[in-house]
Amino acid sequence: MYKKNYTESLRNELIATVRKVLSPAALEYGYATVPLEEQIKWRPLVLVLGNYSSGKSSMINDLLGASIQETGQAPTDDSFTIITGDDKVTGQGQIRCTSLIEGQTVLADPEFPFVSLAKYGQRFAAHFRMKTVNSPFLKDLAIIDTPGMLDSVAEKDRGYDYQRVIGELAQLADLVLVMFDPHKAGTVRETYASLRETLPANTVEDRLVFVLNRVDECTNLADLLRVYGTLCWNLSQMTGRKDIPKIYTVFSDQHAPDKKAGNDYLSYLNNQRDSLRKLVADTPEYRLDHLAAYLENHGDRLQLLMRSLASYQEQRKRILGRHVGYGLGLGLLVAVLMLAGTAFTGGFGATDTNLMASIAVGVVGFVAYALLMIPMVLQGFHHAVLNKKETIYRPETQLDQDLWNQVAKMAHDYLLRTHGKFSLRRIKAQIKKMKVECLAGRTEVRKALSELRRIDPGH
Ligand SMILES: Nc1nc2c(ncn2[C@@H]2O[C@H](COP(=O)(O)OP(=O)(O)O)[C@@H](O)[C@H]2O)c(=O)[nH]1
Ligand SMILES: [Mg+2]
Image (cartoon, rainbow, N blue to C red; front, side, top):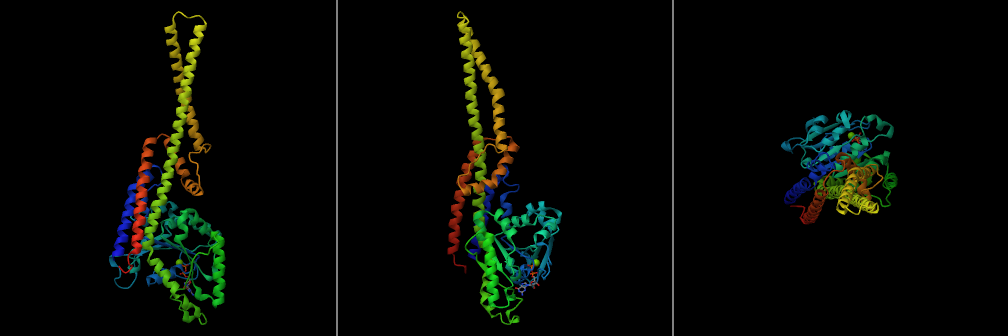
């Protein structure tokens, strides 16, 4: 209980830090359109992906201990369903669905973190819904059941961008289960690619978990090993990694091993089913790691965005300074030439007047340069930046380059919107403050997380 309360208060603290430290700048500089904490303030989320009929819905039903989701061999359910606990009636009576909320309503309600998905349109909204269930398993958790992946021809007929929706949901999720079954061991290459693109690089590996389901359907142990081997090979092709990620090898409770004569190896796999269940139940704990990573990743990206804007302003200032110098030089040159000219043509008598006149011409020369030339040069620089002929940020490492790829367009849009007119001093002060606060937040969270791991799980 103590651990649970500690987890919850730490979560609230992290959300408050994001709200205070990141959101104001994120909104100001076009990094986000809604406050960043909107996406993380709801409960922990588990996203279940996989081929159709890989047993996603059956597994969710098993976890909840009731038949909440429809299941079947054909692609039965082509909707995204958020399944979450109904706090008012948790554990009361038989486990059942206590309400069904339409997609339109869920997508419009800022209490939930799905508002940004409304942009995928009506067709998507019609395939999106929420179910509340009185299961204690979902007290501080939500599971997202997804329509199965089909082959790429059929993907186009969905009427919304399935891969992008998956990418966005994965960003919200604390755990992403990718399910396979023995018949289709490894055809999610496209989805994996889109997950890699959308998830911050350092979170892909810890957040994605592979599950080989329905293993009771293998005819014998040799068959299971063959299927397992095929999946490993496919996964390493997909991930481009030499090491094999952990794969949970499981089957559904409802398809008891005793029905499958000869599959006695199944009893050895019970423990994997239990650890998968524990993994899902422990999601609120990874939520903290996720939030800490969220603070770090967005903090880094946002600071880079702001640094690049500051660098734009510094370059602009340098160009301005240089051209003021040129203007002064020009004015001086004109004045000296004029003075020398008048002296040469014999106007030695009225030296003061000549001097005054030369200075006046010099000033006019400078003012003309400043008014005509400098705005043109600055405009030229602005356009060169917008057309990517000049860069405002040079990444030094690959990590830097990856971060920059994510924010370059935002910097571009901000410059386009403001015409480059914003205060350098202000943005520098904001960066400095954010750096200090992010670092303090990070250190505190890491300390709290290691503290949390020391607390006896029984408490
Ligand atoms: N033999 C066996 N069948 C399963 C298992 N899990 C699910 N199924 C069956 O596979 C079919 C597809 O399951 P479903 O949960 O609807 O898959 P989804 O499309 O991924 O949601 C259903 O007929 C289930 O009864 C399992 O572990 N073993
Ligand atoms: Mg299903």
